[in-house]
Length: 618
Image (cartoon, rainbow, N blue to C red):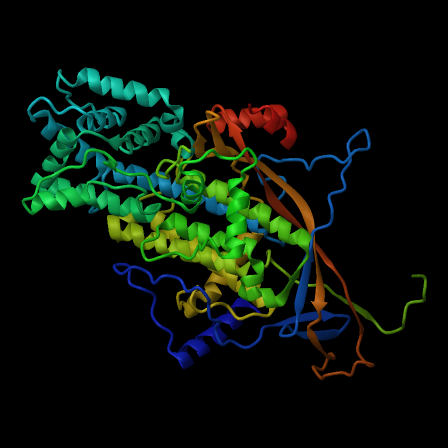
């Protein structure tokens, strides 16, 4: 079935069922359903022409079995060798089959560039969004005119952040020593102050990283905090700029993990000025499932030596103790994490009834979950909270070999949810900056901005993952999801074509050739004085074997397009397909020093194997 046929079928269904229009951008997208509903499309068929016959395969009864053969490489001494690690996907990508890792790498590069572009726009201002730089400049000018005696520590934090953000604030002479001391303490703590991830791409991004991390400092001392609150409350434009950024970042990453100043600003506006003594932040960090879990388990207790946060997350996701379903207040990071949940609970997806997954392939999906979650966390690292804590003669009849056909790994739910996450973040950005501004913004890369607008690239990423969903559903014999495609039925054929186009160009896609190796902190262990990190070491590959656990129904037609009986047609031999899949190499380890991307990649290049890389991180 080609994409034009698919479009026709889906348009008929849409007309018959009265599909809804996509959500308006000024209205929050609906929270995704816990269980999705399929479009009522005809069961897909597959056609093969061979030996003068045309075979029509009804994919309705088809069930595929996936397994991963055991790694069998040996070292020079005859022992089992570790799987080789590639820093990029360049040497691993192949034509004709798209592994989920390729789409994940594409998403990672796009997400980094999107976040970098948005962070600079949020700093400088764009469209209807004034920007943090203007907010901090005006706030420091106002604080400069305040009477002396604003210690401690809120004014010090604001002035220090403005200086770290290269905004050149005029600091009162009386406050200069305290402001510099605040900066010195901050910079000595590399867990907070050292730019990592894409924030090393430019001095400007590094400055934003340090500025915003400084603004996550806990504010202590009622007098100083009250001065900041009073200043914000007295200027409606300042207050609006402050609240706009908090609204943006709570959707771009996640809701705040601690208190901000908004309740006290509102009280001041009502003529009831007050301020907290502590436990409040100018811009709080954002919460996440992993940091919430660490705090819940070991907030006031020692962390066991063998505790593995990632494995504990997976255990709780599988048991239902950890629910990844996005909530009304969820941000983009929650949506991204939710999309990965289907990888560790494949038996709960709609495609499960069309698949038999051997334990070997299930373990492969676990590795995929771990690697992609680590990469996703690094994109949001500035904002996320880091708790401290035979020989027979051939027959005369022709033989036709039939192997399962898959263009990509059959992870339909993962692709659909990831598409939804881009639909969500597009709404977030249009709501904050305006659609026109999004047309003028461009995703960043280490080499500079891309030519295509962020608006168009976001639409393309949403379409790419939706197309992957539509394609693998069709090849499995499943109708695509109704909710996860946001009722855009008329576009699904175009989405499938977008995925097909991507699959033919993976060898030249620059995003797939970029180095993704990095380490990202998840919590700090005070007793051990070490940071637990998720380390992404690179990519490896292995084959996945795909066979028919239950065969499709086959109808054979002759050259005149007339059905032929089983005895008159060719001999059908159902065989196994073997496809290469890339997968991430990830580890959770304690380290004394956090390495940025360049430092960690040099370390990986020096030690090369997983064992040696991790052993030499101490």
